[in-house]
Length: 113
Image 1 (cartoon, rainbow, N blue to C red):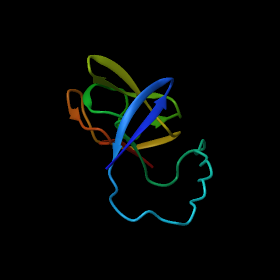
Image 2 (tube, one colour):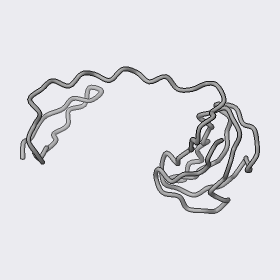
Image 3 (cartoon, rainbow, N blue to C red):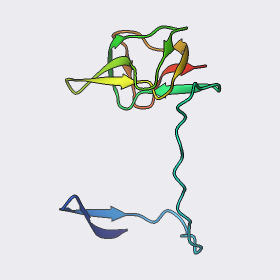
């Protein structure tokens, strides 16, 4: 295990890293930025919970047309209400959660057509 010092936003942290395998000797190219679709989504896409919490409000139902950035759910996490907005413009195919339901990080909340 190796100990490293890392500076993040001006604050110094000490981290320990454990080697889990052989390190690749070939350099890895940086990934190109991926464009997010702004047109209606034609393939199956989903909206996932960004954190664990409780669904306080469901503002959409199956068959509703939504626009990118529209608030679809209110998720309470650590006593704060968070607006969960649509990453797509399109039609909601299925809503998988209901008011009062506990969700884990990355649970699917809704599926789009």
